[in-house]
Length: 196
Image (tube, rainbow, N blue to C red):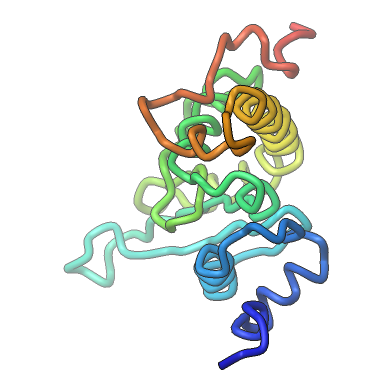
C-alpha cells in the first residue's frame, strides 16, 4: 500500500501539482487522475491554463475519403481543479462566448466530446482550415482570455457565496447542477461587455 495518496499519481498529475495547478489538498485523487489522464492523452496544444485538443475525422464515418471535420476542444485545467463540474462550466463558457462582442456566428460553439472540455468548435466537412485560422488568429488570442478570466471571476464569487451560506463551510451544494446555465447571470454584467 502506498505511503500516502499522492504515491498513486502518475507523472502528469505530479507535474500539475508541482506547477501549482493542483494545490488544494481536498481535491480527490480520483478526480485528479481522471483529469490528468485525459489531459495526457489528448492530441493538441498545452498552455499554462490547460489544453486545446485538435482532432480530425471523416465527415462520413463509413467513408474514409469523405471531407474531414476538424474539432477543437478547450480544457481549462487550472479552473477545473478549483471547480470540478465541467457540465456547469460548459454552459458558462458557451453562454459567455455567445455574449462576447467578438462572437462570430460562422463559428458556433458546442459542448465538448471530452469529459473535461468546456467548449468546442467543429468545422463542416472540408472547412477545417478556416476554423483552424479563426481559432489561432481570433479565438485564442482575443476571446479565450476574456472567457477564462471572466469564468474564473464568476466561479470564485459563486464559491465564496456558497461557502458563506453553507453550514459546513464548503461549496459542495454549488457543484450540484439544479438547472442549465446556473452559473450565468445578466450578460451586461460580463466585464468584457462593460466597455461596449
